[in-house]
Structure formats: structure tokens, C-alpha cells
Length: 104
Image 1 (tube, rainbow, N blue to C red):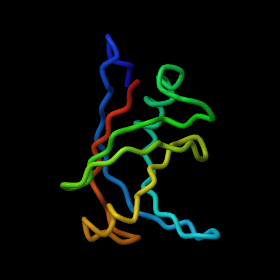
Image 2 (cartoon, rainbow, N blue to C red):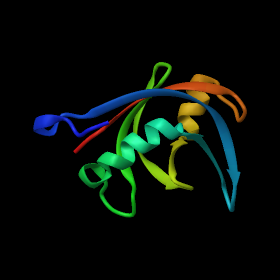
Image 3 (cartoon, helix red, strand yellow):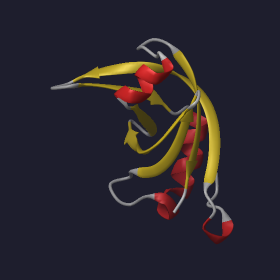
Image 4 (tube, one colour):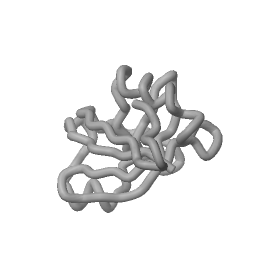
């Protein structure tokens, strides 16, 4: 993944399993696969707004939203908002197809 010329977004697709982090409040994530995480890491300096966070536009099923990828253990994780999970009928343990665009 390389930053697009002229400020164009950079896109990728992947599938992953939804997992739950049980902290003070539960959060749900999908881990970006190693290969795509490495590609994002290679373009991170063009994409991040700090702390390794990468702003993205995401589509899962028919639902689109804006969020940020979080760095975790050498890869990135995508937080799944409650409204997205509810709209798409998603639960922890399910595999989901993700389309995202990262860019300025």
C-alpha cells in the first residue's frame, strides 16, 4: 500500500474474525492481516495523525463509517462500532469482509 498521488485515498480489502476486548467497557475489533498491516506500516508516515493511528473510511456489508486503525502487536486493529455490528448483525467470532480507504 502506497499513498495515492495527489492526496487520493489508499484502499484495501481483507477478511478477519471479530474479537472482543473486555476492558472497563467492551470493544470489538477485527485484526488487519499481517500482509496488509505491513503495507500500511510502510505508508504510515504519510497516513498517521499521531501515535500510529491511521484514519480510515470503512465499509462492512452495507454500512460505512469513519474511524482509525490502532497499532497492536506489530499489526493494526479495526474497531467495530456498536451501530455497525447491530446494523450488520455481527457478533464476536464471526468472519467479516472489510473494505477500507486510508488517506489524507
